[in-house]
Image 1 (spheres, rainbow, N blue to C red):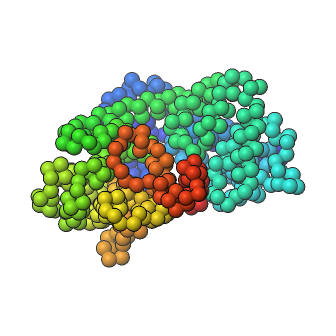
Image 2 (image 1 turned 60 degrees about the vertical axis):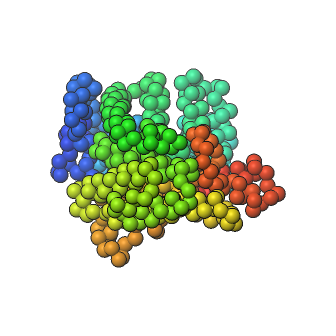
Length: 501
């Protein structure tokens, strides 16, 4: 099906990258650009190209593009992580996707599907892919020669929600024929195909793949230089900001002194920063990245205290102190536990104060309850391992592991920092903290984290504590299984958890 000319992309005047977003420049309460920070403003003259203000105009010029060209431009903006500068323009261009999703061209239809599903539209993969299959539901062999279409089909296949059989077949078909094609491709495209197979779209964080995608775009005969320059400027600004944040976090961690006071505890604060750095994108979220790293750090310290330091009696007293939530509560505890309690109490209250200043509601009561739920979970694990109680079932262990992963607690702090749910939470009787009633989007992430950890990532940290293992409990319940069988089952469970919700 031939593509018809799509709506003209016209670019209005835009604010420079580092200019603070005014109320008039916000979209649905969210700033369109990046909020200014002092060190970034000072660096802007050296980091930004001299023609920066005109780059956004050049990327999507005032001309008519085919629907395919427009979709490819949107896809490149997303892969380079600079799509946030073009939210309105991308939204207005979705009509082209709605048209091309019915195309008989594999690339057009699959890319249109992916962009629409990423934008939240309810589209059926089975309906889109049906025209590319034979009477038996198998993809036609002629498609195996369309490398660009196969790449797009492979990207699309990772949007499987667990119920679309065509996407499973799409993954097998595209993976097989792309792998076979690599040896016949020119080197630049061959590298891109191999990287796409090894690190599939939607199974990786795009900011880590953006440089690879930029290198690929730079190897093409037709290039969008303005897009490349904007992407490079974005890389440089993000790098500088992350370096500054890491320095601040490291100073905080050293001043806290917990690593020195509890030598057996893990000392990996820069590693713990990686998750906030990866998930919370944008200059406006700089403070949130720093504060959430502090919470993650304390979760690890508490975990090590439960696994390596405290007796059952001491851990029980520490859990009671958390529920009392006052600075006098831990007086009878060992010094290292008091220090951890003081840090936890102080940082949580500071985050609650930030939420109140930014959003008009202090969530400290909800956050302290979230901490109490975490400590109860750690306490349950300690009793399972330190007493002669019957070992928990694998599913009971995993259910408790959702809490002890720390994911619900971290998201509770993050959501309040972002101002989420604070209106509903003003009614203490009607609202529950997230840790008491965990939404599937959070519990699934926590299950995946716990299962991957039990598959061996904890060993990589040289962590000597014992806190149970889903694999071991599964083997106890299924004595005919080998460890390899149990690990394969866990990998299937991870895949199911990720796609079932």
